[in-house]
Length: 185
Image (cartoon, rainbow, N blue to C red; front, side, top):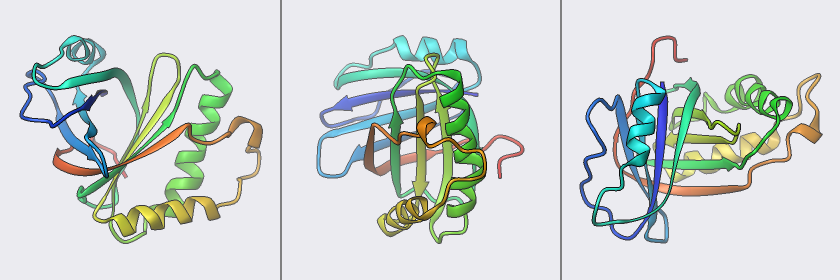
């Protein structure tokens, strides 16, 4: 599965991002007019075609194409979303370390927090990482952030390969129809 993220600034209306999408979420940033449309596609070709489209009526800031590297599901909650950006380019060792941290340290620390929904780890061609996490409330986002900060590195984790996020955006979910591939936990 692949994903596109269309970032925008200005009020968002209804946009046709293309047929064949597996699911999507429209997000508006808390306290601003910026937001993002995260759309899931069956393959890289469909995602690439969608990234090239610029629907009229909105100021589109940026569009990225990503491979869905991991999906973790706790419950079907999607009232708020946090997008965490780890800008690229990133080396193979750093990318592998970040993915391991997400799967083996961070997800186990947050999956049982009340209100945690599905989390998608998205990897771009330059190995930049975007983590899109959905929750039922802002309190759940805060609890997730606290739990992550309280985790200790696992044996073999190198702190030099885990410098942290470049930015974090908080969003209200205006619409969500999220895919959950077979085997999602």
